[in-house]
Image (cartoon, rainbow, N blue to C red; front, side):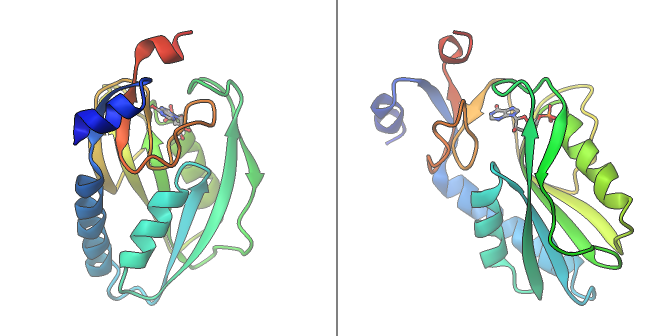
Length: 185
Ligand code: IMP
């Protein structure tokens, strides 16, 4: 099955996280969040666009606790790599003061994006602020604090389940490593 899927797309080197493994892990994280926020009243889930739109949709549909969903959109200069300055292109609709906020991100590489967001939202005085990330690349000097993590992956460019390369491969149902020759072109 795996090889058929990667063969179907010659740019992919291998599948790192299968669709089934993602579904199982999302369910486990949702149950953990249900447990941790059982006395919180309601949770404000903030998905970071565009990469986390699929993860946010899957995760929130598994939550049993009261929650609302909003999104922020970010852009990074230096499009295809992680190097660059982060900028908010769409902000939250409402103030988050006294809300329990859960940031949902697709991936953490060096951690600059997530730590920028943590600082930005912490300054708005939420009741609490935690982060939920689907995949983290194994790195020694990662900056950001992660409270709920799906998977650790090797340090390669990955796509699928919301993650893109130059806007492509975002809707693949699994997370796959891109062949280095594709992103080093
Ligand atoms: P960081 O700020 O170095 O943690 O980089 C995080 C951002 O870079 C993510 O929000 C993604 O937009 C992007 N990114 C980093 N690595 C990958 C990858 O392997 N595939 C797709 N996007 C990535």
